Length: 213
Length: 234
Image (tube, rainbow over all chains, first blue to last red):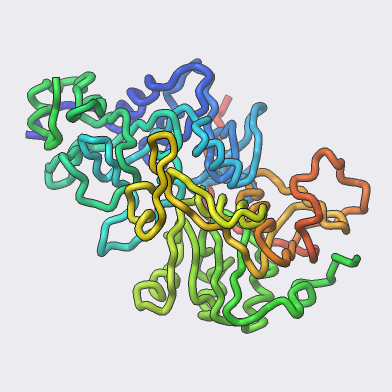
């Protein structure tokens, strides 16, 4: 079934996620596909936050220009911009918890129809920790999840209820998958749009969570 | 009041005790107090509880204190980069208390500000909330988290004057100010001790009141994830 559908690839998902961002927003991008979103913001004036203590994150440095004192939350070397500011971790999470960051775009292992998010641990497997994910989903204005719609076995990752330990309860606003865009609304998920070559029927068939409307 | 010491061993003299709680600055390997960690390894002090966002990597940073089994418990948000850590944790030799990153930073800040506890919405409804008081404010649930009061803070800054006024550099600031604030004694290592009066008072990131001992030294400053882009050819 999944083989028949076209859907979006990683870059198309990132490009779709970039459409969520508005001029003037302060935004935090997670690791993986969310990082690619920065490539698609176009002319919009977006300031990227890195939760280790920076606003105005620039691109990766040119070879030979890496600075060990300048990294992002994924520990990668980065650069600064003319607008950049630095601050400590307490202030960084103060602006996150305090709702000053307009949106976070994050990956997920599972999302439930009530907006529960699981993206930090699989019991019995190596547990690395939640890092800043719990603070981000609890604090930012809008939580946008970018994820594959199904797992490798073809099972829905958009569930009635999460089976994995939660990162946050009722925190997700919008989900962008390879099959389309869905919003968390009272009673379940609402289809906002379908990806190229994907019908609403395809999207419903691939989703375990209740779809309303 | 003499705060400047000649090396890390001297700066830590008389401060280390088995079973103590140490707050350490740094994020990943960025801005970590590598010289003080080396001196703690040398001292042989053991059964340490260390509050630090990460646990270093194998053979560097706090990873050295794990290799020698001097750490009994870590309070961290992310420990994924360290095989020896995982081995000790899975075999039950090492305790681990996961803290959401912002909660850990605020627990340090609060401890340093004399605040024994605070309510936060981070972690409500998750494993992190288990056993913690839940209180409703204006219709929303919050959980109670405790301030951290450390026996010792170990911190890395860029520059200091001899009174302990500190300036950090770029994202190497991270957990260093809150870690410095929450310790009964704070020892700082810097790349350069500059003459009194040469730092602009308006540009001090952490005032010297939080700093008790200072050393200057050479830092390796290892990069964890070297990521670059190609120069576009004209």
